Image (cartoon, one colour):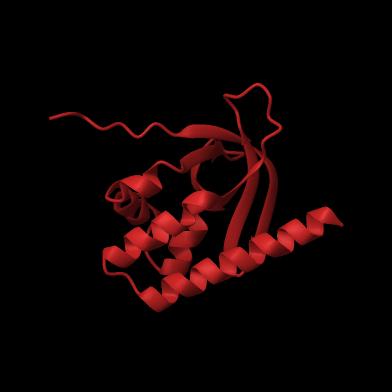
Length: 128
């Protein structure tokens, strides 16, 4: 029997976007010297608010979804508080896991669609 430790990477926030009651953070891993690889992250607090559950409850649920837990990261806000985020590529794993745990399928589909729409709007805005 082993002990599982969820090691999360800290990210440096480059941009912060909001829309559809969701927050997206564009960031890069702080541990990597060459930070050219910028990744989009979903703020889990905003996700929890849309799901109408607490952020601690959401993190507990993620601990039961190992595939989604691999995409977790965090950043520190102005008050030096850790804010949990999920890498964009892990969203489908999170949705699939929450659906398996019995959460509202329609709500989960709506959140995923809104996140993808917001992500596309951000990419279009940045390419202009």
